[in-house]
Amino acid sequence: MATTTNTSTTQHPTGPSVLGPQDVGLLSNRVLSNKDLLATFFGGEVAEEIGDDLTNLARYTGDNLTLNLFRMLLTRLGRSQLQDRPLIDHPAAVASYINLHYMEHDQEVMGALFLDIRNCLITEKLIFRGCLAKTLVEPRQLFRHAISSHAANILLFHTHPSGDVNPSSNDLDLTERLCKVGDLLGIRVVDHLIVGNFGSWVSLKRRGAI
Image 1: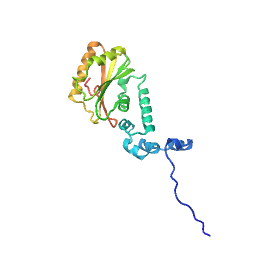
Image 2: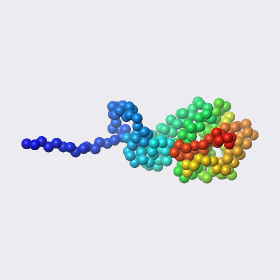
Image 3: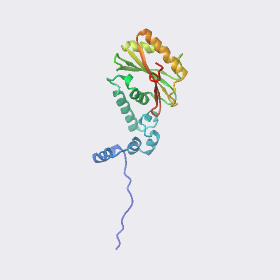
Image 4: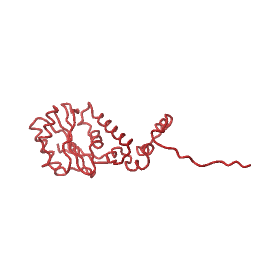
């Protein structure tokens, strides 16, 4: 009698909950892109939405709880990279954190990192949401927080959800105005970062605008 062999394939679930130590070991020994890892853990649809740049997690609007927790962990990791280092020398690390923590889809966000005399982080504050204009940002609010936190310096930031990080005339005028107020108060504005999505950013200090 002929023997029949069942060649059907059984579909197994995927994701971190079903990966054993041996699976994690195999993954760690392979050169996988961020997108490949996201596909392995969260599925192809999520991987396609985010792509290979993990800062695009800021644009993720789905209800995948595990992924949202992962984004939260990345944000906390990004903030930990800002501790005990002169932030004026590490604008890329600052921009990456701002992208993950503050990027919003439909409006600009402005805030400040308040620094000590060594340009190390003391605290941070969201200052403004909406279409940024020099007439809408009140210097008093910004410098009140700087004084209460005993900051010596301020690193400004704001987001451009459109992705175009070229500074507008409003951006430059506002920066100049806040620098002048800071000079009067003895609290320097040491940089102003404009952060777009897809990992793009511009330092106005490096552009010579500060």
